[in-house]
Length: 413
Ligand code: ADP
Image 1 (cartoon, rainbow, N blue to C red):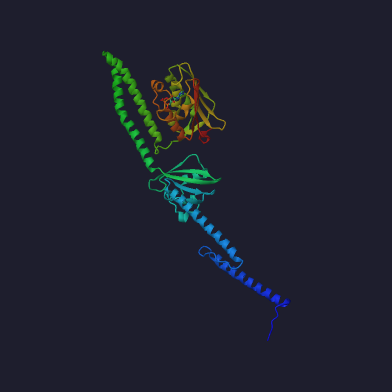
Image 2: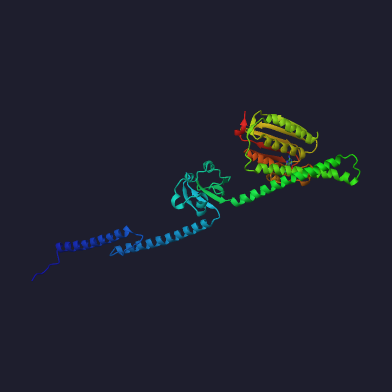
């Protein structure tokens, strides 16, 4: 009979070795399980641990479940955000600092002819090659929208606006304004056509009124009183129609600015003569020529703008007042035409609205002095066409200064 002895240092070492092997075996098994799970953690569930690994795997399982829950929540929020941006009435494109597309909504894809699946990460200017658009993006003109006509060659008119965010990133908002443009064109055409149609009958009526007024043996009292009034009113209507036609012409996109070398110092004395006739000797008119540069501009439009400003200065300055017309360069070397008067002045709340059509501070004064309510709207349009700024400074009761500040590039020395 064999008796096994279980005491002594040798058997203890064997037991320790067996235990260590079992532990090693569990360790390797669990490691294999973990390794298999890690090969495809998305579709496999976390394996069950054995021995001391049971608790580790249980905690890992909990973490994975929480992480999946969070991910599902974020995906739902992202999906909601995508649905919301898809429902936006405007196109939206997010661009990085070098104008690569990070993301866009379906309307932006439609407006600019881009494809989200294909074009995310592409530089937008490679996809939209319109030179105006490329310049707009490069200049980062966040304040003004860019109007892109017929960018898709289907008559669509788009308004594009850049909005900066998060340092140097940009959102490009695109809007289809084709319908708005059509309505605007209809409005412009209607005003131009009506004004044009009114011109002929007005000329006829005016002619007859003048003829009747000149008749020496007109002995009807009523007619003698009525005819001057008729003459005055037909003249007002003629001026109104004339100004409406001028505005229509200035607004016409096909009427591009005809730039020429305009000798402003030579033009201004003529404008002053017209002003003197209008003033009838009731004001002191002075011309200050502080610069002798010429201007790259349309002579006809400049004459109209200068004439309107001088005429306003005379009409809104009581008898005996001073009017100074100045041609000078400002500190930035920009040519400036300013008309300064010592007249009624304008209170500050009216100033931002003065260039709106028919906006008047004092209706009766404007009408009684022959105003049409369109003079400053015309000046503003002419300024815009020359990339110039109309600046207005005024103090009620003291007088006003209206200045046209032209860009330096238009100066000819
Ligand atoms: P209007 O034909 O009525 O003069 P404008 O468009 O030329 O039309 O001017 C708009 C309004 O601005 C005028 O009705 C007037 O109230 C004000 N205005 C224009 N110029 C002057 C000025 N030099 N001084 C005071 N008010 C002025």
